Image (cartoon, rainbow over all chains, first blue to last red; front, side, top):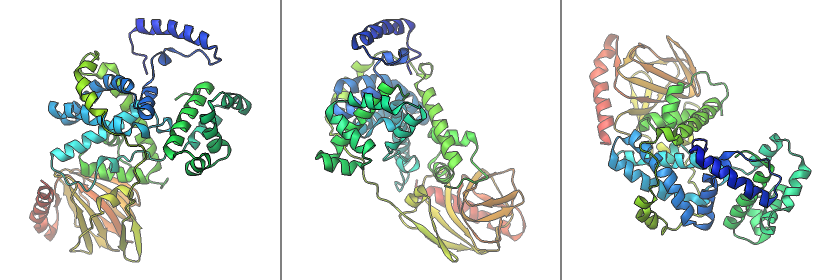
Length: 221
Length: 235
């Protein structure tokens, strides 16, 4: 949420955005100031899909101080807190391809990673046995089912025909994947086999396609 | 998931849990309850969402959030040389069952993981068996099995004891506790747990318990010794 950005920035961005939107001639309801900065989610997905170093740099800048504050609060040790920044951001880089919008907000995902790494760092420092780790205590939601999106959309009571209209606007490769999963109800594995693409490619196309659809429908993320 | 759990960790404890502030033993017993209890699972998610909002609130950042990319550029340059993880790691599903009288009990995942290196059960007087887990150097963590009809002598706690009922039930002067209930006892409580039908619990103590009546008091040095040994074992 960027509600707290300096007012001047918001105004500048709103102006910029209006112009951009007019140029795109979209029918999306006019977004509020929060959409005016590239979202954490978009950055994280760029890091995951394209190994986008610029996007990673931006995430680093946005989150380093916050991770430091978390580390100070939990460890009360400046050295450890500084190590935590590197440790957490390394994990953000490594695991970015596993992130998708069904895992919730990027800041929530980064918080979870940072808290877990901090917990394990402290355990290691206190020489505690390693029969258990933070990821066992706070299991990362693995395999969050994209069916959640179905429910979201249903909850928004969007006309199906409208969604179909948006669906046609997706790039071919993404539309094929969304069709396999949401219309033909195939599993990720079946769809990847049918389309003859690797599972990872399928997942990232699905992620992008669903993100675009959501954006067009105006589902809050 | 059990939707009819009566006793839960307090909001404060759950909040400290999601913020990562609890020591490992306490984190594990709370996590095991959250795994079993639908309402605490939902509540923990809400609390985490609140924690995240407060975390990203610029008012809570140590220093003004100036562009610090320059300071970190060498770190970033190093990090981006690592190959990324492309697919969800396949979790080794650890399953641990504990056999009691006439059935076996499947442990919550977090406890199964913690117990995956094996449990050594010890019989203690009064029909009770205990198996310790060594999770950190501040708490005594153990599975406690009370055979049907067995009673633990009257005792109090110098610190606090968190107990999760995994199977069966027990009661004390303050109430009756059933599967998935989460109970906290501290120095204010002097209690004498009794289990009519038998009961398996997981308990985390942050200081030795102290028997307050009868011959059992002779056990107190043993309790203190046991606690010290548990926390020094991992130090």
